[in-house]
Length: 380
Ligand SMILES: Cc1ncc(COP(=O)(O)O)c(C=O)c1O
Image (tube, rainbow, N blue to C red; front, side, top):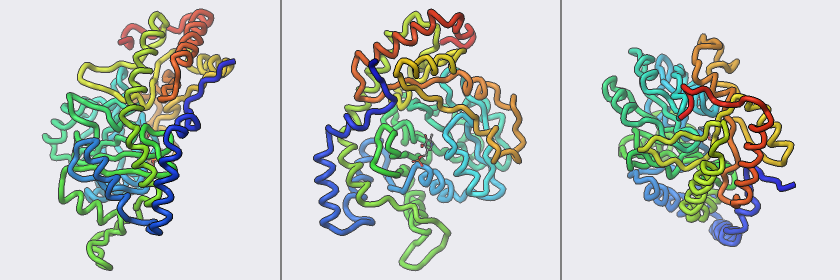
């Protein structure tokens, strides 16, 4: 049976293993394991990639979010509006600053935060909006920035899944006040270990973020603020520099895979990703919706096809956020999505035959499983 997995890091790594060995040896020989030229080079490469003035390499995507919030001075008594349909780190980082995460519901077609829900959630305690460009597709940034401007709020882009995505011709990471990337190995630009990046056009925020990355130190042994150790290791930066050279090609492969799925899945009663005209997603995930999601996932598993649910439990219903007072039904669109989404293999190493295998399994399931159609109001 043909196996199609969610990832194929083994095949992928054959493309650049020799270059990576060379880069690692250079760092070993330099014996500089913190700081050093690879960090600065990675930062300049990412600035050029996304078109921001500053990039600050940090220890993970989570730390990029935490460090950005700390840089903006967000803490006790403040509120940050964000979606609950995202990875835990988005809300966890807000909570760790002492601020209150305020969850707003999502658009059922794009899964991204709904600007109208943001507006309704603004209070006199709101300090920032954290948008998440979920699955590699940008949120509705014009509407969101307009709300932020009206209420004097900062906008943080959680672009962990969205490096390379564009919105109305602008790049993800250059659409708000500060942006955060993750280099977790499964990400579109995945490292060999943890890693992340903060991006901004704002000189003052960049200076503060650099200090916060290093315990808030402004000069040797002078601390005007409390930061953390959010530094990225030099070895990981050197590896990421090699991998960054493959990013555009890998992004195009993901986009081509998505176009093929769209074609191969024509006629199947599942909802394929909705892409508004002004958006060019990078398909960190290719996520379909199906009323019999769990049955479909089991069917695919039995036929050697991997898939994943991002996310099965919405953040407003996580036990650790009980005290925030949300209940089942608080965010109906988010909760419905949690029951219906299924991400299919979309990684850059897939062949046309792999994509056809996945699509035929889905057709076969739909023919045998009874009604699985999406309701008309939700179909794009
Ligand atoms: C949307 C989102 N935000 C934040 C993170 C956190 O990144 P990291 O795992 O690098 O800490 C991730 C990825 O894991 C993510 O998908």
